[in-house]
Length: 131
Image (cartoon, rainbow, N blue to C red):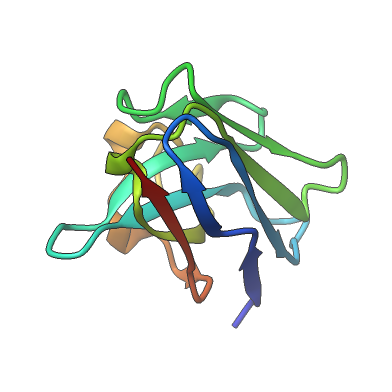
């Protein structure tokens, strides 16, 4: 399995910022949609932000204007800059990738993918926002 590793979680007060990092390996022959999901206690895992092979970024409505997803030129390191954090952002954050999304007929839009489409997941990094 391809390794995915996240880092950068922590505790911050409401209004503060955190930056999450994720690294993985890439296979040139595969289309690649990857990004961030989160899961709060007692809630389902939800998509936060995704980025596709065309560098198009997709955001959940709850984080638009506050979070920024980006990746480096090698497309092996991805980042989530989280600004103006709220208590509702408290969750375990997971980096995940969906290979061959184009071949399988998907876009990388959050409305077009499911958690089960993502075959590779990191171990998660905890983000705590105190009000």
